[in-house]
Image (cartoon, rainbow, N blue to C red):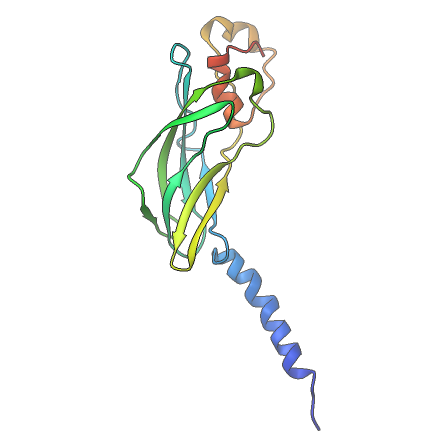
Length: 173
């Protein structure tokens, strides 16, 4: 007696197991995270209208990736420097690398309150891809003259780019 459904059912069962496992391993898309717990923050220079964002990129996948580029510019912030290791850099599974991006704030009025993830370009033997990481929200960086007045009114955490630019833009939150 032939069972014509056995082979397709076995293939479907295998696919249902293999696809999530491959995804968790970071095969189709590299699994990178922005870790700001230990290294978050940065500095601000109102006179030069520059800010920095320090964070670690963590490879949360099961395979290594070669990081070739980090960061990008926008209409409101221009990337002027990516400080840290020299790229390309091999990032093994579970490893992290410290990066500091330096931006010049170009338009305080148009800094978005929406997510603005940081692109990380990676290469592996089967090709290159860009993976976005999003540093965790941060407390706004306000100048000392506003520090006393905003403590009671401070909205809490802001998207990383708005929090970093708040000092340069001197927003009264």
